[in-house]
Image (cartoon, rainbow, N blue to C red):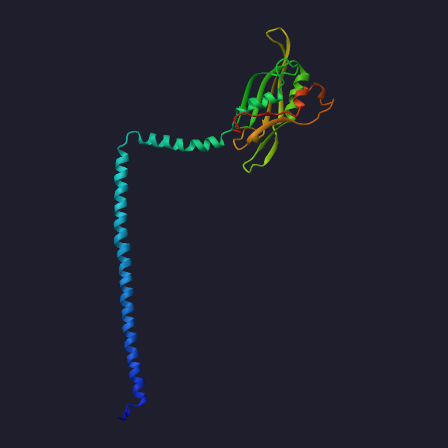
Length: 244
């Protein structure tokens, strides 16, 4: 059987183009419907679900506020809670002024030593970062020895990076109210007041395992002959509190 295609090529191309156009229109309409559905779903979520959640949360806030408003002394409770939360920060930043006693014990010879200093009043000003000492001693040589010992005192400690650091303990000395008097034993003593600026590292809570030591060799003109030999030994005195 012989078939003869009597449809011209132009007609066949036109039929294929028409079929392709129909397909394109169909897919375009389908994609448009799907896109419209997605947009409607998003609008429903944004303006429906989220709006409902917001309304619910607002109501919970109002209910919670109303409940808290009925609590007696609420402002005092909140103030106390806030202060309790600040305690760790205050503790970490507060100066450890108790170290002053160990520092003084390392620079002041024991009782009975001719260079011993008897302290009657001690004031630590953490704002001005000064230490004020009112004391008495046997005489000017002992006073000079005490001052020079303080000038040669250092604190060695570990910082936050566990690196060993060293700082001079005292600077900017101010000596005043120097006068002789007699004590209860009718012995002549020298009264004085000595104020100096202390290094931050001495009382800082960030200084780990601080150790007070005396450095320098001194000489005759420095009244080195009056310095107690025990202060120049290698032994040092560690401050209390495990570095705190």
